[in-house]
Image (cartoon, rainbow, N blue to C red; front, side, top):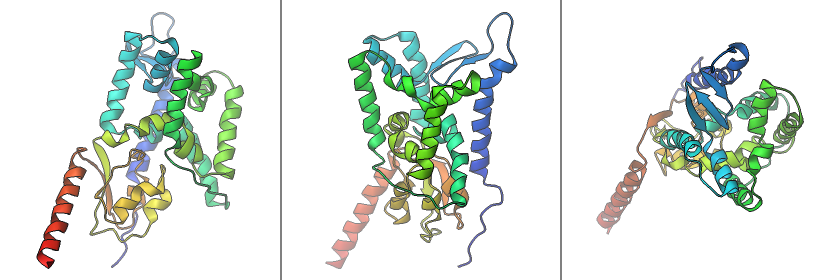
Length: 292
């Protein structure tokens, strides 16, 4: 079998770059298009923003505020619900690879690994979900939205918008950790916001689909996976037709780098993989019956 050439233009990576830098430009736009009177069409941060008069809030941040204050602000939570439903329908961790400004920074620092051999220590990828839960519990106990105090995601935008301070050192520490200890360690294992979105990731409509007839198990997709290479194994080993793990961020790297064009991102209802499993079990049962 001849290997197909990897496309010269990785369409999903290009699309992601456009979205990433468009979002950064959107948050920086008030500095460029400042208005003397009235409100700018957009203003705010990833924690809370106003877009053409509509208030949007970070769902995880809103939960922290609600837990800390022990009361619900309907207006604030409504804005958070809009964002929550969006990521619930699309795919939870799509925020991480397409929106998060810290991930954008770390993607470029990770390129150093192509030139220098660096450690790649692994941890349990579900740790970040437990950290997300811990953050909510601590916010309730001490009355402060804990993650917002040190969130490197928030600091990335604040440093770009205003000034450099302690947030720069937190970001620098994460960069060093990812380079010297664990490849994509913060995003894969420890980020509470990533853990929050991982917890709703299985519900997303869009998934990476395997063409098992084309896949030869070359492992190229695992080598470029942003989230965790392990989430691709059920597809590689033909146990599932889709990457159904909540950790998948739909970055598209596996699709762009597959030399056999065996992967694609497609819309898929959550119930269908379950149907496939039932159909597969039925076929196996039929084979056993015929063999007996």
